[in-house]
Image 1 (spheres, one colour):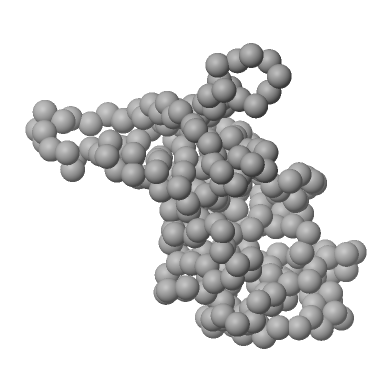
Image 2 (cartoon, one colour):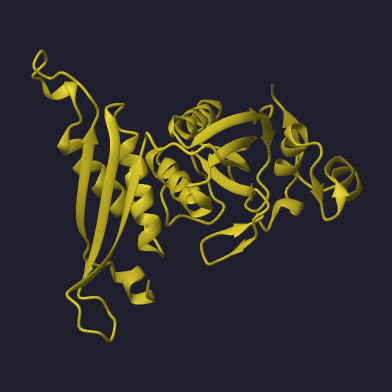
Amino acid sequence: MREHEKKDGQLFLFNIIIYIGDADFTESDKLESTLSYSDVIREIRRINDNERFDLLETFCQALAASIARMSKLVERVDVRIEKPSPPIDEELDSVGVECHLKKDDTDSSSIKAFLSLGSNMGDREANLKEAIKLLEDDPDISIISTSSLYETEPVYMQDQNSFYNITAEISVGSKMGPFGLLGLIKGIEYYMGRKKGGVRYGPRPIDIDILYYGSEKIESDILQIPHPRIAERRFVLLPLSEIAPEMEIEGMDIKEYIKKKQLPGMVKKVN
């Protein structure tokens, strides 16, 4: 996305198809018995108004994941986002991307990933529990384990409330992929009220980082795996050492690394 588009915004066309699972509506001809189209439109506006994406692909995936979570009746969501009069040399009416999210997709193969979750706004513990539940609600995600809850002091911007942090080990269906996982995470953050455009490292109701995705190494503008700042974050290392004591950081056992480096920042186990 070009710089002037990030600043001034741009026009998008949305084409969304929502597939509802088997349900008998003859006995309950009421709007509250199904998914409200008005609620879907409000959700599209909320995400579109509150976030600026570098990739249409991420926008598409985040939107599909958010709509799928709106009702248990939703079996599949198809999202197509078109950009009219694209700023490219070829004369095209529009360009676009399309994604499909199926709740009943089955794939026996999976990949283990590690996440770091933090919150320092509102009910911090409740926010973390909600984020874990929203992750587990996705059919491609299974929660393997979560660490204890830790209270941690802010590292990069001290003038804010302390955080509650946990790490989680998850199993990810291989069809989702790391960028699909990123799209899901962004959708959860937006759904829970995180807004972009504030001070970097400032207060937030939820923050979710992908630490590791199997053995993959990714360097892109929107995703780096392993996370580039794991080794400097005590608030990540301590809970991570609890659920993955075999992990190595810079060639050292993670617990040995923590002792040797003596990284700054209060990290206190809550429960």
